[in-house]
Length: 183
Picture (cartoon, rainbow, N blue to C red):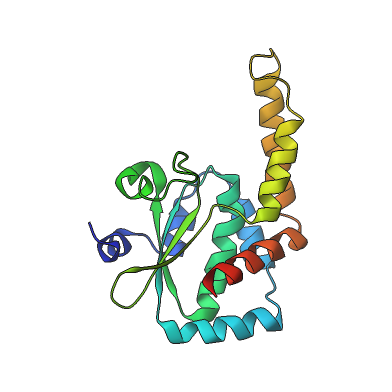
């Protein structure tokens, strides 16, 4: 299937958001709270000239998606760049073409396509600063075979999701990472 066909198969942002059963509140908090800086708006104005579109692999249970999806949606709106959303586990044929480090089905994954429907850029699943946070938090977990590992891991993910969806300084790292990749 071509990237154009995947794009046509995808949901709009509002269709995706209204279908969410997990993290909808967090996603909406970021979407409504994000204030793009003037330098970001200038970059996004320039991006309009490329006439790109985007395919987004995501899932509502993903904390990273609750952070990145609304930020990239807002950026795309400013750039007049239409995004379409696909649920990762329902679209593994595409997901498996965009594995993180060649092995992980990490999401969200944003595939930008040009006017001819060809891949132009790919970004995801997180900014380097958010990756550093995850690495640090995981280092504090007990061994995977420890009796309290599952509980501690769940608590860590809850703390992580709350932090990344409520701190605008973290949101800015995503904006900057995306801008760098799309330059």
